[in-house]
Amino acid sequence: MPLTNPIIIKLNEITTMVEDKSRLSESEVSEIKSIFRELVESGERYDVDEIEFWFKNEGSWKAREPIIRISNLLNYVQDKFHQTSDLRIVSDGDCSSKD
Image (cartoon, rainbow, N blue to C red):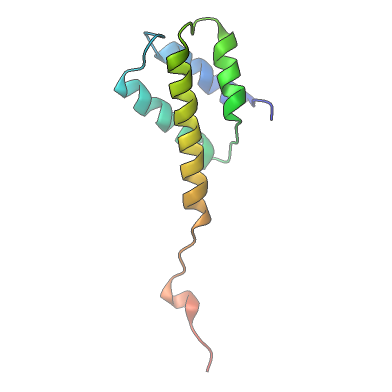
């Protein structure tokens, strides 16, 4: 699945936001999770391997550890969203029985 423009824009924002590309701060981790949570909630889909490949080829990310950390975060955000979106809660009013 190729990366969409909204995903590429967010990847560029992350690249600009992260000051030290050799490690991620906890605030940067939180911001990255928030960015991708908003994307999946708006219906965007992404392939984590494609994003990892993008970071490796972007040029300013020399250390492998932050790229792996970002990939793991994105995988976690996407999986968590899909797990919770699959759960449906039915209100008591919707479960009325017909006598």
